Length: 388
Ligand code: SIN
Ligand code: CO
Image 1 (cartoon, rainbow, N blue to C red):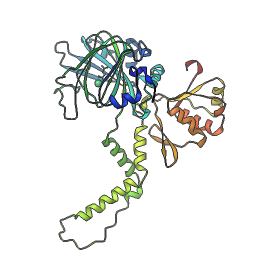
Image 2 (cartoon, rainbow, N blue to C red; image 1 turned 90 degrees about the horizontal axis):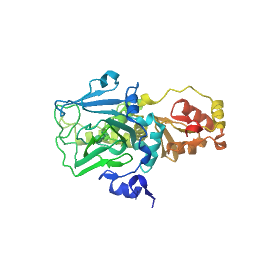
Image 3 (cartoon, protein in one colour; image 1 turned 180 degrees about the horizontal axis):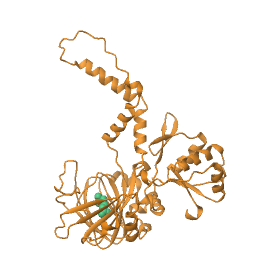
Image 4 (cartoon, helix red, strand yellow; image 1 turned 45 degrees about the vertical axis):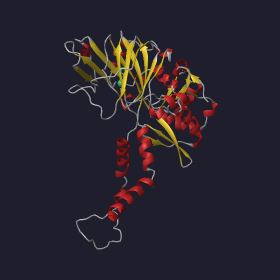
């Protein structure tokens, strides 16, 4: 049995996963005091104006707060002029810009990395919100600055109707059964489908640690992309032993079954499904946040070793591994990557979220070469000892 976790208010990860995860909300006071004041409203404003940042500015009309507008990035200073009383600024993937924030993912070690999406921050003045809504998304809401009042309501689904004529998917009503004000460091877990409504009590920042949920349609899309580039699959299928058709207008059940069986056979007897899913799940959500780096060589890495640098996953990149046919295969940023046997334990550690110190264990030509390649592709990054 694992340890009770402070971030979960003293319950264990097992308990959380079996009782709350994707089932019901959980409020934990002072779950993550480290997040309090990590960023301030002015930091979020500045970030929102940066090139490549994905952000949205949501406004409610002063005359009728039920009328909403949304301006998506790129945002410019002029977008913040003549502001109404109620507005919210949402900035995605703040964890790609703040290592301190990215480090806080480690507080949720019971959910695999491939399920992580990004950390979004919302900034709103008193009264600001994004309206009553639900998401098909697991999210830990962490109050970072100021106070926000959260109301939770009914479970919704794909049939739920939204307010007509608005740029946001807003719920016409909410049956409120939870009403609490969150202070800096407090956490609220909201399961997918649960109606929620967060209104700023004062100038406030809320961080959403979001978890992507794969859907069949996107997986199918990827499978079909992979199959469509396979030349072998363009070979026309031979007829079954053809008998004279009774009715030429009919496609018989045998004929249909034969074609389906051939398709099934291809789906089952190939690595395409694995490839499709692993490439999808290792794909970065914000590839534009992956920095271009100056290429280094093995010698440069050895110098870095001597200076106590650490190696970690570049926050905007994704790296995962899977055991397939007794082999450990690595996938990074949507592509399978080939690494030497000797590099596997080090890369597993990094994929597991560890920072690896470049000590003498890594003085192996194969490992160094693999690391250099992954550093040059910005899948990994070097962190000077003083920043670690
Ligand atoms: C917010 O922080 O205001 C919005 C987060 C959410 O509702 O998912
Ligand atoms: Co939401």
